[in-house]
Length: 311
Figure 1 (cartoon, rainbow, N blue to C red):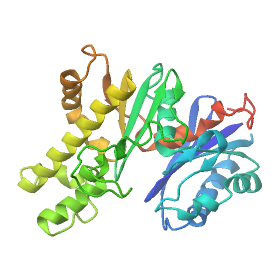
Figure 2 (figure 1 turned 180 degrees about the vertical axis):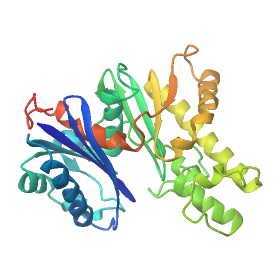
Figure 3 (figure 1 turned 45 degrees about the horizontal axis):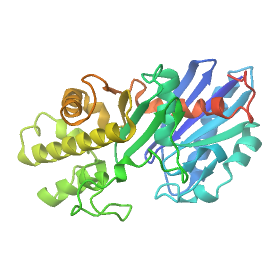
Figure 4 (figure 1 turned 30 degrees about the vertical axis):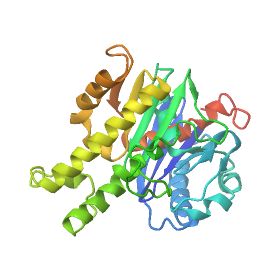
């Protein structure tokens, strides 16, 4: 018996198969149209069917990591998101049951990524951890004493990107003012470049900052300095709010942040009320597949729906 995990991003979706602590298969597919779930579910179903043909044992669970507020314990998507806006009304449990005869589990994408790191990655062995996804937006998840932090409205630890860091800052896509995302994120980066340079980055986003021909240009230096400042602020706030042992950086922008980890580490040592070396900052070891791997492990916390020996 094995489990499938899916991470639904806006431009790509990742899919993995897991059995007894081993990753059997992983792939990433382009999202042709994120205006409705029905488009991507068709492509994902084809991937699952092709893999299932090669297996003699049954598929028992499908976990989906979704980029929105999710009530994981009750398998509910709670907020309508700009991508896959019909997900709130879509019966994913019936889709999994009718199409594959499998139980379905839902989770927020950042929380799923932390679950993936906890079972397969660098959070293994740590009971108190924080994960930050640095990409188009800024996602977050917190684990305290080995349990995901959720809160009464499923927001706890999930919205560090929407904590206010600049009272007179820019307007955020959540309608807030001066959120971390509106002061330094992937979408902020593109808007800022257009504001300064009256142009666009042609879809390159953060990668454009690291191109050799751009590194020395004032506009890119200014944008990169702002991003680093915002990420340092979030990391310091995370340490003071949640007191983790480890902070894991994931997401597309994190791929280029390896050289700045010492800068973030120094910020903790300078500004946080902790002993030197008490918190480690590291880049995700699972990369783009962290959320899908975590989604495949969701059954571990919900064994009422899947056999305890399923995977």
